[in-house]
Length: 195
Picture (cartoon, rainbow, N blue to C red):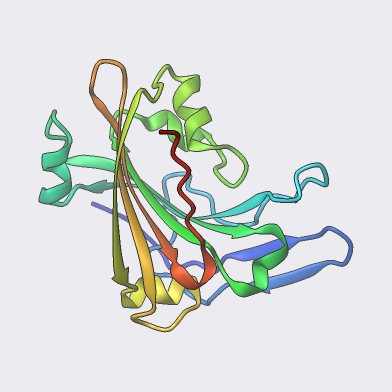
């Protein structure tokens, strides 16, 4: 049985003048009842003006869709889903720059001990000896779907870059499968290659 509830995320940026903003209304896929946390964004640090704020939208156990379960070599039928919206400090009013959804094996229950508005997924995995060793990425341009456009505060079918990733540990086991959706009008991609 999977329990979810509709949530409102309240985001606080309080550098000089307090501002409280309700972000894009209800999200039916909001946090589950299993100790999930949502909003507020972390306070930006003056020493890191480029800081990215994070709002956790979903943190729950779920039954893995068949396509996802097949990607995990051990055939995990249940996974942990962690979905986050990210914002640039001084551009909050323009909306999120990325919606990232990560799937990890059900056995990684320690993830529910972390507040991902402040902690990174990399740190949480490293703290439990789940070090990232290799990463495979696939980039695809596509339009935003209804739910995505709602969460991003954009028109449906606006262009976005989907970056799908499969992360493995040193033994070659998958420790994370993720999808990051970047609206093209809010992002710029630059490749620098040393030849």
